[in-house]
Image 1 (spheres, rainbow, N blue to C red):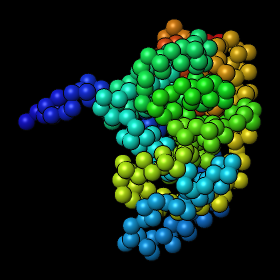
Image 2 (cartoon, rainbow, N blue to C red):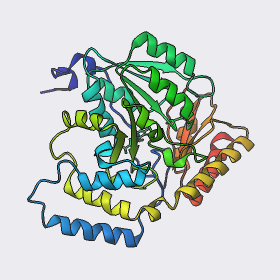
Image 3 (cartoon, rainbow, N blue to C red):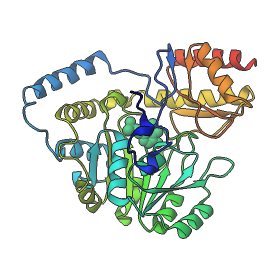
Length: 360
Ligand code: PMP
């Protein structure tokens, strides 16, 4: 019997939609999902294994439902006097964002974002039945604050997403602009700071605005700067009332005991894990200069990836790069591609492949 997705009683609003789908391919140089190229050291891997082994002896029990120790550790990492009551954690910041939309979005409500931006914001909105309103960025991929304020006024969204630094463009939003949007948003303003640690200058995080803005939510992740994408740990900082709201929608025991202890052990080794961030920033800046030197257009990047172009046929460039064993990402505005900053060896392979792929 032939049976397919179309034969299922799928929700109307999901019909014809595509899932998130960054390719996962077995290629020597993988620079397509903004991962940190540095694996944990042998010392850290051993500490993680020992912590998991100890936890294994208690796996007949449910984990701490409120992940209190982990939230204390994350609050200490964020600083600014934050406490566990202002921090929440989940399986990757994607789950954090989903919980936010479950609590503050939903049928009859609207979420807004400034595109091009992270593709999961509209996908998670749709999954929770929240209408999505995209507002275009300016020609330099920056948020046009006046246009943003006008769109907020027009649509009165329950949730506004502001990604800073933004994926896929790499551009960051000024703290003064975040403040203006926080003051205008009638619902919650979610500043997605997945790439915060990679900013070029030590500019303040949106967490510095939390005291005066109880409907501001700052989401973070251990997937990027902490080099822990495989462990799936994301978190947020917000007013304790926001954390109370999220308890209404989170699944009980959503964060496994193994995940919690892995994240805590990683936090104990934060210096080691974050040690490569400076190197990655320097590698990123060198990459931007090299690309510009070779006549490519490059968006200013405050992240661990760079958006570059412009190509008449970006798909053929992407494919030619793959032929040279380098996987990058075909994402973002037409004519542009995105490459994640890898190790010096990986970036050398990228440069060689790009020159060959584009005949420069
Ligand atoms: N926000 C942004 C802007 C991202 O680019 C990503 C990952 N690509 C995420 C959130 C989600 O990351 P994770 O679920 O691994 O924390």
